[in-house]
Amino acid sequence: MRVAIGALMQETNSFSPVKTTLRDFEAEYLLRDRELLDYFPGTNTEIAGFLSACDSVAGVQVVPTIAAAANSGGNVTDDAFSALSGELADRLVEATHTTALQAVLLALHGSMCVDGEQDPEGALLLAVRDAVGDDCVIAATLDLHANVTERMASAADILVGYRTYPHVDQARTGERAAAAALSMAADGTSLTTVLQKAPMIVPAEHMQTTHGPMHELRAEADWIEAEGLAAAVSIFGVQPWLDVPGTGCSVVVVAHEKDAGRVLARDLALKFWRRRDRFAVELADVQSGVGRALAANEGPVILVESADSPSSGAPGDSAAVLKALIEAAPSARRTDGLNLVPVVDPDVVRAAGRAGLGNTLTTTVGGRLDPARSTGVELTASVEHLGDGKFIRMGPAFTGLPLDAGPIAVLAAGAIQVLVTSRAVPTSDPELYRSAGLDPMTARTVVVKSPTLFRAAYERFAREIVYLDTPGAASANLREFEWKNLVRPIYPLDEFEWSPD
Image (tube, rainbow, N blue to C red):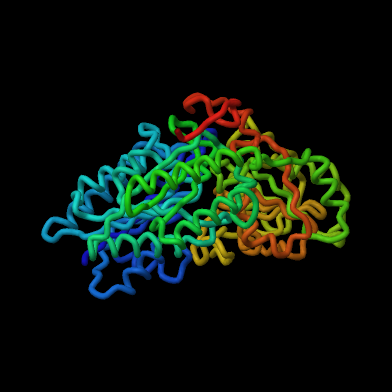
């Protein structure tokens, strides 16, 4: 059995002013052919799961194609998407030139938007279907925040989403999707993908699957799978800052029989809808939240600036919390505990490099990439660290994958340590700070720019977690954005009643 594998992953935030280019894919990973087989084993990734499932079945020949991923951000440029999706389709056509493929396994995010295409994953899956034909099984994995479309569901035989948020089951998701696809290709098992949308978007802060409304929905989905009523059931909370027609939460059932799958999907979608109010999040005023953290007897207190989360597509250049820390503790001593803050600002990194280690620098930090929502703050600090910004994720999410924040600098102003990076990368893994010589576990306060993913690594040693109300492209205040393309009505922008019927 010949099985092709590949990936094309990016999560788009429609309110981010920073476009995602081919260079952004190259900065995370852009791999071809044998590179896929060497790069992913041992990592917590979908492709690692694909390879593991293929290894467990005798007679499977893996055909690697292309794997590309970029950090969350603004729209992907048409040039970048055309190049990558076109290359994937071309490689699949080439792979079927002499001998047919029995299955294609793809790792997708599911919430990408391209300048010239608002449903790029749907377009990609249709191109893949054209390349490999109707007899080939196509299975794709999706992030829990995917915006699943009818084009995606009709083009693919199998769609399987993460079960967890914080996302810690990427490899397992790959294994599940691959196992279903291999079985379908080998013995002709009949599977069909059924999609049911719900007209709602909800904040990511309360979308975790460890407790709360999403946990309850996931428990019902797990029961359906355990009872053998469906091969896979996925609950998608959607990327809530995706301003395209058709954005909304959804349920996807990979069913043995379409009508039965439709009943299951509609029932779960209605239960999703009835829990919509429970996803609301309480945010603390930034000054009061910072004051509360500094007054705590013990640390670390995690200050969550989720509105500027790079893993949600925001630029990461907000200095709102840094400004509040400077104002609240202008004379704080290091012996009282350090306060760690990340900010994206390549200009400041370059200025720190020119100043040199141990020297004092006066500059404006932040507010350059998204000036409509972020204002820089004046800072006089010593340059305490200069580095290349490269590190390996060691936490439970995306374990083993390298990240490159570009050149970095640590600026010290009393008890405040500002980690300035050249590129936006997820701040959810403590290894980001550790790569710069900073230890979050011993700090007084730690700023993370992540709505939920940080919990996978930080929750076990955090004394307290405080969500702050700051401006940003990934704010939980969804009503405050200028929506142009959403199909209305949609919750929470509108109040109305809804049923799948």
